[in-house]
Length: 354
Ligand code: NAD
Image 1 (cartoon, rainbow, N blue to C red):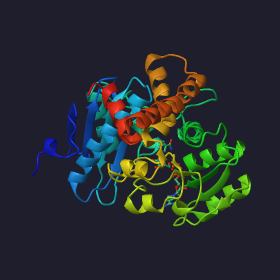
Image 2: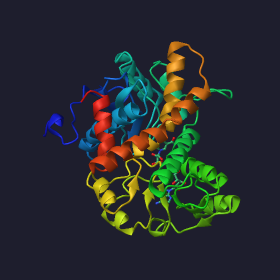
Image 3: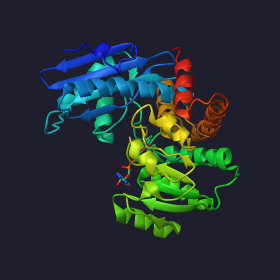
């Protein structure tokens, strides 16, 4: 067996905690990549892994991603991630969630959890019964931070697209700019609505084609088949569905000047960032442009923890900083010839003292 600290994805993680509770059947990994800026924050994934080594890889890789994302969002949080290794049937019981909550609590606030794939709002509410180190809980009333992060993520992406259009095309507005949107769910749908309001020309695509068609009818947009959306001639391709769409084949198909969207982990491998740059396509690093949701969720957590009032305007103010951060990355990339994804990684590493 290979030791996990020799794994390619091990990046001097501060703590990798394996939790086993035989009574409830819980097996989980909690990885803290960095607490340099604050408690390691990141969601809990509930997933069946055919090979447990993949669970370790996910925990290591995703917790590092959270360090970078939180740092670049200017949040006083480090990076962490939990993975619960589900059985084949993905059996989830109150006892299993309780054992997981106790494991989070035992870390005394060094790790702050939230929802991720396979964990619902109700699951997190159950976890929050036993530990206060939970963010992303449902909030009541308007004007409060927190709640569904989708609209906040969409707002940050919209502002980021505007900045990219200014940087690459020299235009102050997205009016008449053609944006091809992949995925019209919570994030992609929100981005499309904001762009439509500002007069962008839109092509929408979703594997649920009726969803894309309904939104297109509402916004006066066109639609494209899911397998065609990446090769449409447009100004901006905005991936808001799956990760890893920017691979050899995907990049070769692109007929755009800008890639800017909210999907996590858009680059399949590290070399795909430079490959985009070589094709003259401006890339908005995903974890920088899609930070609106984490900003909202984190501010809600900090307000609750500190028993302080939570103002949605503070969330908006911080999301409004995303375009400036992107501009800084692109400027440095232009000056040094290093691709934007790598510039962003270096900036994030510096911020977390690496
Ligand atoms: P969602 O489930 O609401 O929407 C995703 C949409 O993509 C769905 O409508 C789905 O049918 C569609 N889709 C899936 N595969 C597709 C394909 N091959 N082609 C076209 N459409 C496809 O999810 P979401 O919350 O909008 O998240 C979208 C992406 O953004 C994900 O990668 C997510 O990890 C990332 N993200 C989301 C948030 C957030 O606040 N929700 C924050 C950061 C990052």
